[in-house]
Length: 261
Image (cartoon, rainbow, N blue to C red; front, side, top):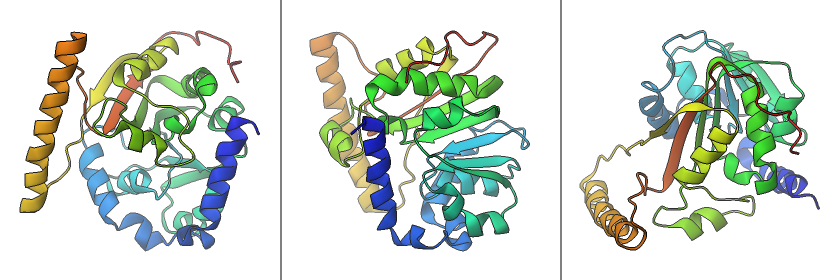
């Protein structure tokens, strides 16, 4: 089986057994949950100030980024995923801020490459690690093609330099590849993105147990950072569980034909 078809089949089967997707997603649950509250705090200082920008949330999952955008006042949101039209049927009736929902029939890259739509902010949270390595240039070239000038590509993925890389890579059948800051940055640069930024979203610890755990994790991170410095002569900037980067499309024309399927 083709790797991309394998990923699509994995998620078709997972969605078929997920009670959230048997019927359309409940609108109240979609916008009122703990994940959305956390996303609001993370993105309120990341998203552009213009509330009319055209946003695309690819692989929206439970929808916390999209619902955070709604809470933050954004008016032109689009969502793409396997079965997106069905999943968002009820949500779109309640929230007209979601202007479009698109079913991904084959791959994310095919969906974008075949479309003439342009966006100002494209968001991939824990999607890019599901893409086979040989398709990564095709994916990010397609994203670049689908952005307005000064548009921002925002990507989140497990960090392979983090404390539990094997767990992060093998937690699901659908993970195809792993990233550190350096190879993800290289991928964005090779596809023409500039002004690449690294973000760190610290968890919102509330209880004494959570705060104590945070102190212990910092000790383990310090040990890992020391190992990298002693044995490799470098000190990676991000050693947490998650890697979060953005890149901006500037004045360059598309660097390459989109042909690396």
